Image (cartoon, rainbow, N blue to C red; front, top):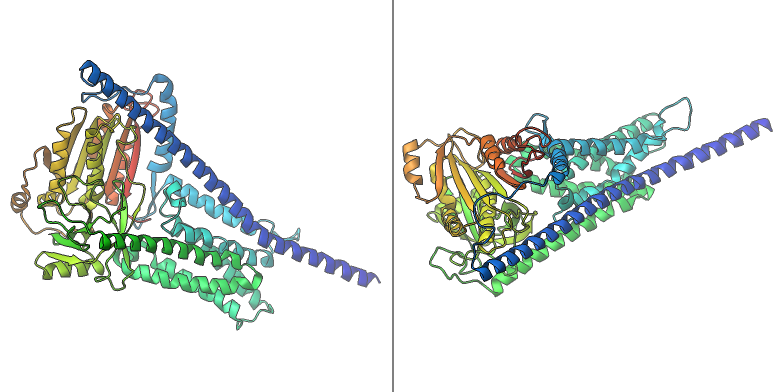
Length: 618
């Protein structure tokens, strides 16, 4: 009787432990999602509040501008906002809060850590990554034993790590799509890769633990389909993570895109057949729906814009070379390593300066649905004297860009191709519309002018139309390797400077720095070292743009930014698009102590908003 009672007690205790283990396995992944949901809700609330402040501030400045213009017109007096001087600094009562906000930005977003091999993350990204790892591993190993003499029981955490990893893939899939709001909220482009890699480590832990359990004599059979499907999924994801490292991603982009598509499909199918054995399929099958929804939305946009271009083709009203006479795009060679592609703007397609679009080139790419991202180098709305089209600068590398170059060479410098547009994507940059900034410094390296140029032109146009808010000063700095590269945007610079000369409330400075061929301050992926002499470059690049200051050597960005900060007023915008080294130099230039010292917000210096559009990948 005593033996029977003891056996019954042991059996009951084992059943209770087994039930508790399964409860943790199914419940803890949900707790992690509650944490993610709370974080996303907080970030969304912060974003919404900032949008409310933005629109209120824009309305207030437009209202004040209208009132001042009306008052000036009635009294025949000069607009009180005219002149080139900056506005007054922050009131003393607001300097401490503004300084604390700037200190937060400097510490979390402008201070970077170099991990080697070209990988640089800011402090916010490092902390977020560490917090994500800690959260996943804490929930994986907490309460993982029922024995006081053991800290960890293999059977308790072996399955839980796999379940928690599987629960991450709806988030990972969402972060990899283009039509989601999470990336807009946090602006951390590396999240998709980071979460994938952390989940892969958990899968390795899960797989290694299960192999060890099987080696100890588990009843599981390696020949079962669901078990093999799981190992196939882990092997596929491991291979994808290795292929996703920066050198391969940059040099073999098209290979990576299609390898990513095929391997992810294999992984999700294998993962689904593996987890459904334990009723965890709801963590995997939503990934197919998320991906399908994103692709459907993108396909719908492409079809809609293509149909509008076909049914309502635009005709050029100018004598300039234009692609707007039909729905085809025009490709021209700007240099041996750079192409310009001009696409007729589809009706209904609007964008903000600095946004990007995906181009689908059915007759050029290997597959008709292959899409490539490029920054839109033109402005919306277009100037009345210019064709209504989207302009892109395309660096010649391999794959589709090399094929485009071949078409241009066979066409004696120009070619016509079918081009479909998907977009726009990204937040863009609005210097004047919100009425927030008193001054702005825009820095571009090489083809980074595709981002900085439209932002500069849009700010000047907004001031011309009277919707530029407090903006008084714009400095445009462009680093190029050869003087002839000025021709890329010569017409845009000429028009923008001509408009700026008619706006008495705006002062602009355009500085083009011609660096040595071996400098890395412009886009290294576009240019190769030049073998031409400096005299030849100067002769070819002499386009005679009035108001453009052409200098030799790398720009002293620290001096440029600090000089503009001295008279910037309350708020200042600094934007950079170029190589990682150029972006790093700008980050260093704006890293001014906001609490004390010269240029600090407490002493009347401006609050600086920094936007970095770098060619580097995380």
